[in-house]
Amino acid sequence: MAISKEVLDELLKDYKGPDDLTGPDGLLKQLTKALVERAMQAEMTEHLGYEKGDPAPKVTDNRRNGSSKKKLRSDQGPMDIEVPRDRDGQFEPAIVPKHQREFRGFDDKILSMYARGMTTREIAGHLKEIYGTDVSPELISRATDSVKELLDEWRGRPLEAFYPVLFLDALVIPVKDDSRIQKKSFYLALAIRMDGQKELLGLWVEQNEGAKFWLGILTELKNRGLQDVLIAAVDGLTGFPEAINAVFPQTEVQLCMVHMVRNSLKYVPYRDRKQVAADLRKIYLSPSEETAGAALDSFAEKWDERYPMISRSWRTRWPEVIPFLKFPEVIRKAVYTTNAVESLNYSIRKITRNRLSFPTTEAAVKLVFMALQNISKRWTMPLRDWGAAINQFAIIYGSRVPL
Image (tube, rainbow, N blue to C red; front, side, top):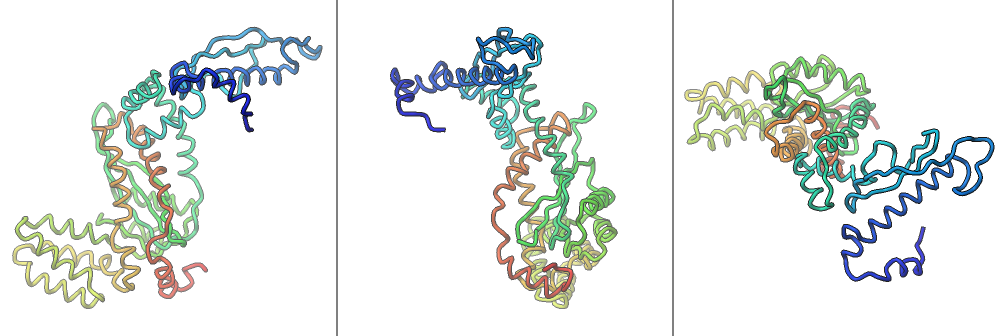
């Protein structure tokens, strides 16, 4: 609805500078107060069925009964409004419901700041500085509680029946539990859809990362509609491949090469680390399984005398090391590391690092979920060369790839 030029001229006839418009007692605040109160009077008229000053219809004995004062926190700072009352105490204004102390838009600002990693103390200080209003940590917590319903709905939503690639990983966040700071694992399942877009399938929390807990997560994903995954890219957790194949027997498990190399270099002092890493690269960048096996033999001949645990660990996990080697390069780049989910974890750590720990697991889950929603807004493009990759998947896996 457009406001006429005459009305605007009348409102701004005494305008002398920005403070007259946006200051503590500026026009915007006065106008907001007037409009809110006018809207509540209109709602009261609708509630009672007659205009103010008109005789009440005989169908109701209810009447207007004055007003009560209420202080709102608004974008323009604290604002006192008059809330109309009825005799029966049944009237509840829709524009500012009972018990609500923030005018619309205020909670959204709190959630936006919280999702970007600001602590409740930082949010309170920012709102005080910008809007001149005092906001308690309890109020901020109540505002962020509004995401619980959204989180529950998101966690239980149905999934697509098929995803070509699934990345499974966990990050550790310190949480206060039973008066002690404990490190809890936040599990993430990140999928690549048929259109090449990333989709986060779920978020779970447990004390320690383990294959048994992953089994429960995979079962939940299946119960939500997921029927088949071509490739699951995972870290080196013992028992992980068995957990995946117990739920999705046709899925090929690909160990993350970044994790494999990182674990291998734990055995190597700094002076040899660069050369060992270069020789390991010859293994996982080999053109075929045969040449990768030969590269591993050469590595063992060169390094086993000093670091025998490295080649032994690669041979032990060889069935999960080599699946990606049968793919063209365009697919290898998509699956041989869990970089996609590692990048996601890094973004979350940037947000959580402001806190030495979280007061509760629930507080940590709220922040991580809101951060994930914020991050996923940037996922607007498919993976690079995805069209070529999905065509190769269709050739290799046939009818398992839906048309």
